[in-house]
Image 1 (cartoon, rainbow, N blue to C red):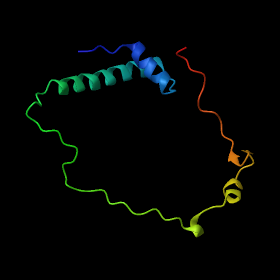
Image 2 (image 1 turned 90 degrees about the horizontal axis):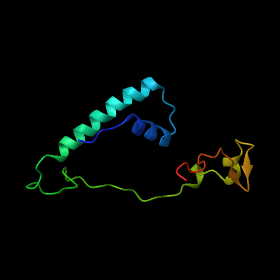
Image 3 (image 1 turned 45 degrees about the horizontal axis):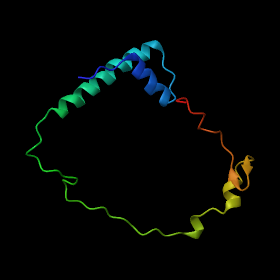
Image 4 (image 1 turned 180 degrees about the vertical axis):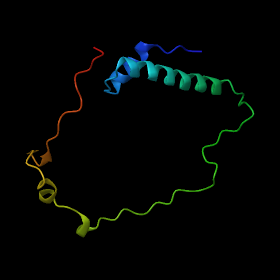
Length: 103
């Protein structure tokens, strides 16, 4: 049985860009520990006589062909008309990636 630590929860929160209070860290430590313990219990189940399967209902994907409908498509100018923040024909948005913290 693996032991989840407070530091593990803080690490996952940091990776998820979440700011947790000490109370939330304790709450999630308990909840995540219960989930991990349950998954470990499932790993102890004997499935040696169970055949692998990826489909149990017999249903198949029903896909339609992609069709471009010009009357439902915006031109580039129409799409960009709702913002004044553009650069070289693209939307300008805030950066979501920062420097790596594992260096």
